[in-house]
Amino acid sequence: MTENNSNPIIYNRHRFSVAPMMDWTDRHCRYFLRQLSRHTLLYTEMVNTGAILRGDADRHLRFDTAEHPVALQLGGSEPQALGEAAAVGVRYGYDEVNLNCGCPSDRVQEGRFGACLMAEPKRVAECLAAMRAASGAVPATVKCRIGIDDSEDYVFLRAFVETVAAAGCDTFVVHARKAWLSGLSPKENREVPPLRYEQVYRLKQELPQLTIAINGGIRTLEDCARHLAHVDGVMLGREVYENPYFLAQVDARLFGDAHPLPSRAEALLAMRGYVERELAQGTPLGQMTRHVLGLFRGQPGGRAFRRHLSEHAHRKHAGWAVVEDALALTQPRADHAADAYALA
Ligand SMILES: Cc1cc2nc3c(=O)[nH]c(=O)nc-3n(C[C@H](O)[C@H](O)[C@H](O)COP(=O)(O)O)c2cc1C
Image (cartoon, rainbow, N blue to C red; front, side, top):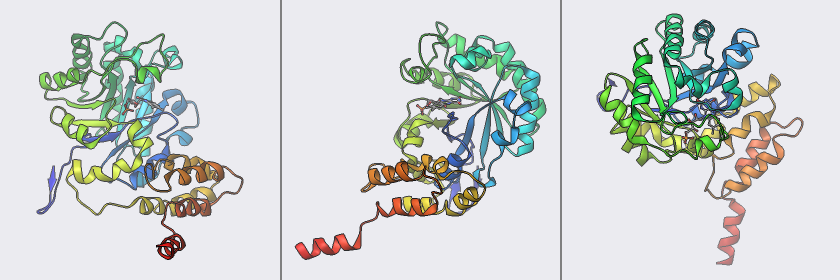
C-alpha cells in the first residue's frame, strides 16, 4: 500500500482484475478498458505455448505500454515450454505470467491443459517452478476452478493449491465453480455448475499467506466489496465486457483513488489517437470497435450507438468518423431540445 497524505491508494494488484477471455480481451479491448480504470489488472486471452514458441509470437504478445498493468495468461502443460514462453512474455514486458488451469474446452483438453490440469497438481507445481525460474521478479500465478468432475470437495481444492504453492506460487485466482470435463460446452461450464464462494473464502482463511482472488458470476461493486471482506481480490469477466463503464467506478470505490471519472464519451474519444494509428497499420476499424459496443448500455441512444457501429465499422475504408457518428447518436441533439421547447 502506498500513501499520499490525502488519498491512500490501495496497492494490491489483484484487488480488481478483468478476466482472461478468448477472442474478447485482445490488445484493442485492453487499451479501451484502460481508458476507464488506471489500477485494474488486465489479463490477455489465453495464449498457447506453441503459438509463442513456434508461431507468430509478436502477433499474440505485442501490446501498448498504456495497457499496464497487464498479465499474460499461458496455456500449456509442459514445464520447459511454459518456462520458455514465460521468459518471452517477460521480455515483452508483461507484469505477470499466469497458467490456465480452468478452461474445460475439448481442444484444450486434447493438449492436456486447462482445467484437466487440476487432476495433476504435481505437474502444475513443476510448470509453476519452471515459469518462476524464467520470470525472475515477475510473478507467476495460477487461475483454476474449485474442482473438476466428481473431485469438487474442498479437500481436493486445498490439496491442489498447497501442492502448487509449495513450488513457490503465492497467487491463485479461483473461479468458484467446478468444471465438467465432458458433457458441457465451455459456455455451459460458466453457467451450470453452481457457484460455491464459501470454498474460496475458506481457502484464504486456512492459507492466509497466499493471495487469493475470487471469480465467477460477480456483477456489482457491492458484490465486489462483499467478497473483498473474505479474499484479496475479485476478478470479473462478462460483466465488464458487456458493460465496460462498470470500470469507471473501480479506482475510486476499490482502490481509494478518487481521480475525476471519465465520462463515457471521454473514454471513447481518448481512443482516437490509438485507433488512427492502428488504422494506418491496417487494423480494420471493426476489430477495435467491437469491444466498445456496450459502452452506452442502458443509456439514451445506447442501442443506436451499438447498431451504428455494428453496421458501419466493418465496411471497407471505415474510419474514425464512424465512431464520431455513433457517438453523436448518444448526445441530446440541440434541435430536438429546441423542438420540445417550441411544443411546450
Ligand atoms: C468469451 C469467454 C472466453 C474465456 N476465455 C478464457 C480464457 O482464455 N482463459 C481463462 O482462464 N478463462 C477464460 N474464460 C473464463 C473467464 O476468465 C471467467 O473465469 C468466467 O467468465 C467467469 O467469470 P465471470 O462470471 O465474471 O464472467 C472465458 C470466458 C468467456 C466469457
